[in-house]
Every structure is written in C-alpha cells, then in structure tokens.
Amino acid sequence: MRVVFFTPYYKQNRGNSTTAKRLEHGLSEKVDLSMFSYEETSVHASLFDWMEKADLFHILHFSRFVQWADKNKLTLDKPYIVTSGGTDLNHSLKEEEERYLPLLRKAKAISVFTQQAKQMLVKEYGLSDQSIHVIPQSVYLPITDHTIVPFTLPEGYPKLLLPAGIRPVKDVLFALESLIKLSPDFSKLCFLIVGANLDEEEFERVKKAEDKYEWLHYLPEVELGQMKKLYEWGDVVLNTSISEGQPTALLEAMSFRKPVIARENVGNASIIQHGMNGLLFQSQEDLYHSIKKVVSNRDMYKQLSEYGYQTIKEDHTMKKEIDSYMELYKD
Image (cartoon, rainbow, N blue to C red; front, top):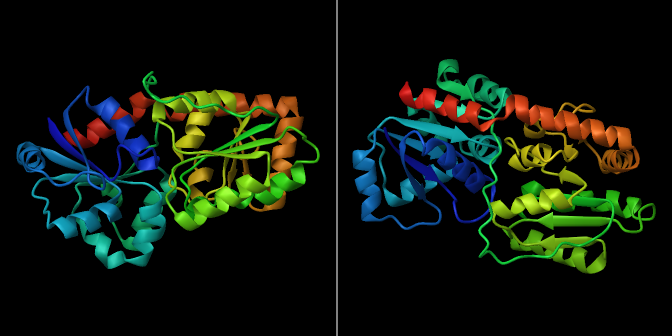
C-alpha cells in the first residue's frame, strides 16, 4: 500500500513533527510511506509523482493543510484520512468553520486523540460518528545522533521541566508567580523551559524573566532523540497550556516515571486522572500547592510516577496506535 503523509512540520521539533516522526517510524514498516512537510518544503515534481502512485493520503493538522493547499492550488483526487490534534480543533475550526469543514466532510476517516474531541466534531459540527476514530498517541523517542551539538543542564532541586514551543497558547510563564512563591522554601529551585521560539513577543518575555530570576533557564529546541536526557534530568514535568489536543511531552515524561503537573484542559485531562497518575491545576495558587506537595511528599511522588508509567503501558503503546491506523488504511 502506498501512502503520502502530509505533515506541517518535520524538521522543527514541535508537536506535529513529533507525531509525524512517530507515525513514520511505526507505519513505514507496514506501508510504502512518503513524507511531505508542507510548511517546510517547496512543492516539487516528485510530490506529484508520489500522489499519482498513492493509494491514499494521510493529512496531519487540517487547518494548516487547507491554507497550504489553497495557496498551491492542490486538489486531492484519492481517498484521504485526516488526523487532528489541538490547535486546529480548539481554535481554527471555531474561527473559520466554513473554510475547514469541507475537507473534514469529504475525508474517508478522521482520527483524533480523545473522546472529547470526537464528541465536539459530532455534536458541534455535525460530522458522522462512524467516520471519527479515537486513536490515543504513543511514545517514540529515537536514539540520539551523536553528531548533534551537546548541551549542558543546570543543577538544583527541585528540577522542574516545561517542554513547549514559545507561543501564547502554551503560556509558559504562567508558572512564574507560583515559583516565585515557592523559591524561598527551595534555595536550589531550578525551572527549565525548552522549546522553539515561535512568537517574538512571547519569546522576549521569556528572555526577560530568565535575566531576572537566577533559577529560570531557557533552552532552545532540541532534537527529539535528545529529549531522553531532559526527562532523565527533571524531577517533575509541567504543562501550562491554555488548550491542548493530547500533549506528547506529558506522555513521554510518564514513560520515564516522572510525575506530571498540568493545567486543566481537555487534552491534559484526557491523560491525567487527578491525584492518581498526575495532578491538574486551574490557578497559580493550585500550581504552587501541587508542586510543593509532590516534591515534599515522597510517597505521593512515587505513586504519581508509578501510575503514570502504568498509564503509558496500558493505553499508549505504539503497537496499539499503529494497528489502529493500519485498520483505517485497510478500510
């Protein structure tokens, strides 16, 4: 079976490229897969050759794809599947419903990461229940290429890690007030934000905060294979996003038995059972108490770590994810 996989990003380390690389790793063993990163690559003759020979297309992130396809006057003449994460569902579709719904209505199948996302598409947009499939994400961290430039990590305790691209929806400085309050109790507090600069204004705020607080550190995006080093370094992994589809960083952290503390939204709540395999917070006060509780209570730290790890083993294996996509392909 020949499949052309359209992803907005592949080279830049962000959520869509993580998803694309993981699916490429799993699916390329079963189908003839051609990857095309449409936000990073110019349209070339071989793309049309791939499309002509393909049995089906697989599209990641429908709003970016529609914008790109309109700009390049690209039409789809084969059956296609759409996989949708967070931003396109939670923001783009609400803002420009009529622009994006035609692509979704004509799709042979739509895959989403959570039941809540499926219900939204059915109830709010009238899409067919039978065409929408919930396929939770799995974890894939490839072996690091030793030619990649190494980086050094700060020392301290507790070491709090926040992996996220720097843009408003990720709200990476939401934790600042909580950590300022926490810092007198932990003289060696260490907070590390890791991610690509995707918004200049937000990035300037991060850099100013880094200059002001000695315990706050920023590291530009790292290769997917280097994330292992970061998860091994951190004591707790945070997510402060205003909205999420299903954050792979939380899944990756849980696979390393690291406790996760995340802002309450649909995507984060699809992974975290509060008080069982992680903690959810709504306010900065909540976040302050959550961090203090986890790093001060060894039993709670161990429970969240172990239950988080079990969540990955039971619900987020690559075999389950890839088998589910193969069923869609065959249908």
